[in-house]
Amino acid sequence: MTSQHEHRKDEHVSIAQHFFNTKKPTNDFASVRFVPQQLARTSIAAIDYQTQIGGVSLAHPFYIEAMTGGSEQTGRLNKRLALITRETGLAMAVGSQSVALKQPELAASFQVVRQQNPTGVIIANIGADHSGQEAQQVIDMIDADLLEVHVNVAQELIMPEGNRQFNFRENIQDILATVSVPVIVKAVGFGMSQETLLELQDLGVQTVNISGHGGTNFAQIENFRRPHKEMTYLTDWGLSTVESILESQPLQSQLAIISSGGIQDPNQVAKALALGSSAVGVAGYFLNQLFHFTDEEIITNIQEWQYGIKSIMAMLNAPTLAKLRQTPVIFDEKLQNYRQQRHLN
Image 1 (cartoon, rainbow, N blue to C red):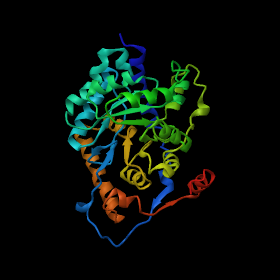
Image 2 (spheres, rainbow, N blue to C red):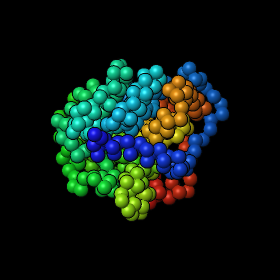
Image 3 (spheres, one colour):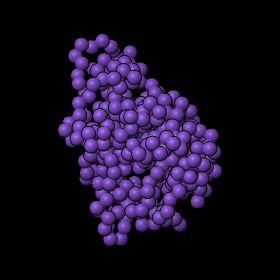
Image 4 (cartoon, rainbow, N blue to C red):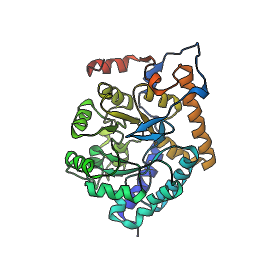
């Protein structure tokens, strides 16, 4: 018999797909423009966009962000994603593994990722409501290279059966002191303020995924699951992906920043990197691809993204990510106003 937690995994995927197909992302990347450089001095072959997360090397600066696992259906999706990342050299994060701690028989829906991609970079995932010991269990479950710890207070409070009290700070400290791999603290589509980033830095966190508003919207998803669907007033809760990156800029010399939240194309990846991100996570776009394209077609699409990012870097005379971060960008009036109000100039 399917448990409530397992059923919720399938619901999240189904509802996320529904909203992906009916709502355009609002991550604010349209409000950022590159300044073209017409006298080319480099080539595609000269582009080196390798990067690191927590000291772990990535061949490509974007990866497939946490989405799936925890049920039979999402286990099949994990298997497909693992095969796709194996063929394209992308890193991959699995969805929250807490369900497998409660129901060990569901661990296979996550373990299939390492089985299909034995040498790839795999990122484990657990909520900040868990202990360091539990975090190490999910790492061992899939022989993970990194661990994402998600902070999701808004999602939990809107979720009908979610948590109502939180000890995120204490748990993050315990996890940092316990686990055997580098830790990423990750938002879940609500963004990160500078105040939160300073708190995380104070706790000893070194890598943060700001995961901004504009992609998969867990306020919207969890409200859809509520009997009366009355919490629509929180649909726009949070900071956009670009706003969150701007919040992080004064701290980027101390914190490594990963960006995610509604990333739709190589140009948005390049913009996130130019604004100081070390890497970029993509979730909803590739989840949607799984339901509409074959694995071979998705592999081709990812290879086109890889070429597209390098092309943009070549057009900007930026052969490395360090050079890309030095390229000028233009913000529209809305983002300029945001920067001024938040004293981020």
